[in-house]
Length: 144
Image (cartoon, rainbow, N blue to C red; front, side, top):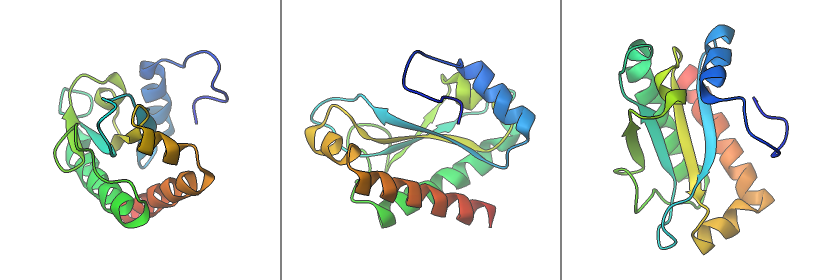
C-alpha cells in the first residue's frame, strides 16, 4: 500500500512504480473504481503496452490480467465492462504506473462508480471481500 488514507494525493505514479521496482515485487496490482458513463457497468483490467521500461513484463502482465479476469467472474457478481475495453481487458500505453514498472502489473477498475448498481455494490463489505478474495486467488494462481 502506498497510501495510508484518502486525504490528499500521492505518492505520484512514478514514485509508486519506483517503490514496486525497488522492492523486486513478484507482481503488482492497482485497485481502482472507474468514473465511466452512468449507463455503463462492470470491471475492466488495464494492461501495459510495451513502451521501454516495461517491455520485459508485458506477456506476464497479460497472463496476470487474464487470471484476475477469471477470478473476478468466478468470485464476484460484477460483469465485465460494457463500455470500456474488450471482454474486460483494455491495453493502455498512457498510464505511467503501468509503463514504468519492471514487474508484472495491471490496474483493475473494480466497477463504475457513476453507475448506481455498481456504486451500490462497491460500498458493501461483502463485495469488497469478494474482490479481495478474487484478487488473492488471481495472485496465487499467477505465482503458483
